[in-house]
Amino acid sequence: MYRIFVSAPGDLERDRETCHDAIAQANETTAMPAKVLLVTVGLRDNDQISGSRAIVSDNVRWSAFFIQIFEDDWGPRDLFRKLFLLAVECRDDATMPMREVVVYLKDAPNEPNPEILAFRKELEDRQDLRVFRYRQADELRGQLADVCNEWARSLIGPGTHSPMATGT
Image (tube, rainbow, N blue to C red; front, side, top):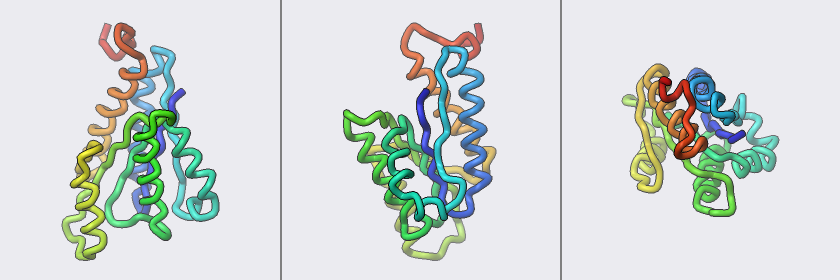
């Protein structure tokens, strides 16, 4: 079992559900036939991060992968941003299970707030992680399916392939 922490602050519930769907699809087609399971971890709403910050941070530390979805809000007191930075720190620490952090930026063409635009640029300019852009949940689903299947294959290991993933 490998945890995937999904960080989706603000009003991105549909996008968060899309992540769960893509992870479930990767489990069905690639991971589970090889006896690997990708387990989704995250928050159901923003208020949980304030009241349970230590527990949430521990869940990030125990995760193998981290998905950051961002449009225009880092949540209460920018705590989702702090989780994202914690995930990057964990990825860079060889003693931690974190293998990769990816960012999905939802297009916000009418965003006027300079702070939010700066957050978006900061994420886009990072050279130490993969950043994907999307407009709608369906586009996000396709990008996530590719990444989650890639993760599952990397966990299965070379020479061991899921029959469903290889089509045999």
